[in-house]
Picture 1 (cartoon, rainbow, N blue to C red):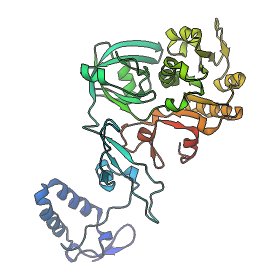
Picture 2: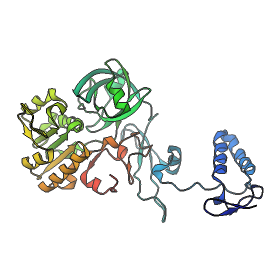
Picture 3: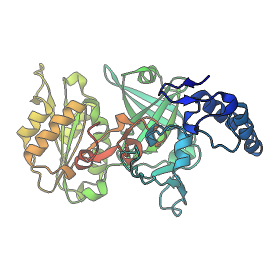
Picture 4: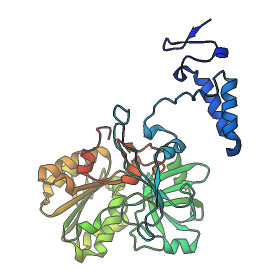
Length: 397
């Protein structure tokens, strides 16, 4: 007796086979795939037809097609198979990459909404962290700690290089890993510095670490601030709360090469003085003749001698000129939103506003697809973007 599937299509008794491959039950598809994957390569060709016969499918009939999925929702192995590899770039052109998977061109009528950019693949095992030791811990605020870690392999530590704005995955073994910007300048070779705000399970575990504890580091990941193209321009940094971490990296790097740039300015704000990170450096920043430093807090605080007001309002008060100036900002999403509006009101073009989205990164290597925005992956296309680039992305940001 014939029965019907959930869509209303009838199919015949298993002994007689199905009307079409598309009508095959899902459990039979899964059984066929499981048998094919569980056999050795030499046996797989013979095993798959047998499995089909047991399920009632004629041997010559093709397997039921898998329902269409968005490329960023597929399992890594399926996505890798869908993206053909091209030879790696010449030696010395891009350290740490082995192949580039070329994105497919979406077919007419397909469910693919955006063309994905090529994904660089790291050489070796991209999931394997480098063992490291916590050298020092600084309590920045009540919920922010800074860790200075050293790679256990001394040669790897000495050879480690990165650009301002690149990030690393810091892991606590047995708990997990999270993404944090490397906020020590590249010239610092003695340790790698990460500032961590306690917000979840992994960050809570990181906050429990002590000097001498072991951690894992996967780095450097992502792109960097385009500091080379900023030479000869004025740079205006805006940092809010923990958002000062990526700003600190590139700002200190530029100050080391201040002669290559015009004026370098910083507006750093937080809820209160107690919520400001790097308090042991603030006076040095204020005294540095190469840096125009302004500090602000949201509400009046006893003994506070600097600006009071929200960052966007203080920015409008300072009114930096947009002429030959790049604005670099990082902070909470709400702060970025209104700071961008203030910059636009001051006349800054979208291509001259730069920010970073490392908090959206997950695996860091373009595999899991959890940080994609349309056809872009924050971890490999970013995390540094201009506001113009972000405006071209879908509104899901």
